[in-house]
Image 1 (tube, rainbow, N blue to C red):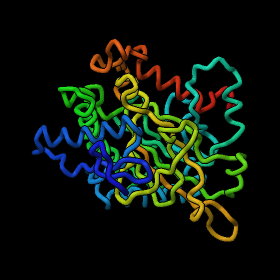
Image 2 (cartoon, helix red, strand yellow; image 1 turned 180 degrees about the vertical axis):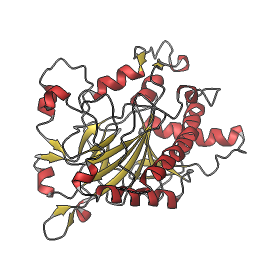
Image 3 (tube, one colour; image 1 turned 135 degrees about the vertical axis):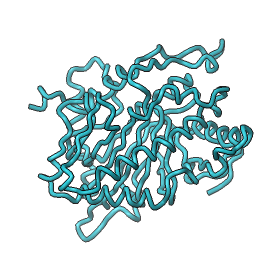
Length: 354
């Protein structure tokens, strides 16, 4: 780790670290401004940042990973008691390896065969998606309580704990980008439209990833406002080098840190001032690449929390981010429309899957 000239306290592998210890209910506007400026500088340069001294305890995160491992250790037929609904409209429940295909496709390309082409290389991961029980547009698909007792209660609480932390970050983003109202972005977000995702990348032969017959998760940007990621110590997350397109650098695990990244909506809101960076999951670092004599990749667990606005929200460039030299780059978009467009390429339609 080293110091940065822009005031961000430190960095790890080229990714800034921002300390939120000084952001409390009693903090002055000046104290918040300091932290917010560091966050904004990091998101302008890199689009990714480690958040330390956030509001989610080490014990809470460790318990979340323990529950995630219990979930994915279930028999396949037990996990299939909460299957992801057909198609891309509702994104909840259990997705088995190969069901979802992540890419950076926008969903509006003029290529009828693009989805088929993308699916020629499968994503070797499984996931479980959780949202607010009060969000009727995306109803949760819970496991029966007797299959994994206590899972639903813990994950519901963890979902809302994560939202409390996300509210603090959205306030810092507003201040950091120069808005007078720290709650500007919060007025677009209720917390009910977010998504908590449990991810498991099972061990597979490293050669399958090296020869591109399989992938863990291809390079993509996130669609929403921000993403908070909790990751284990396996490694494998990479972000695009902000100074060299097409080159990726490791986002190494950092104890008790959240990996925060800017989503497409904040990039659009800010007229590209804030950067929604490409990222991917690939092989762990070479020294940690294999487990056992079979030369399999290590299992990886991660828990991203995707923060999105209310469905009918219209996202348009902030006036403060537009001037004669920097005209608006994006037309206004409806969040529901954008979300469905991007999601259309990740899950096959029921007709194609049949």
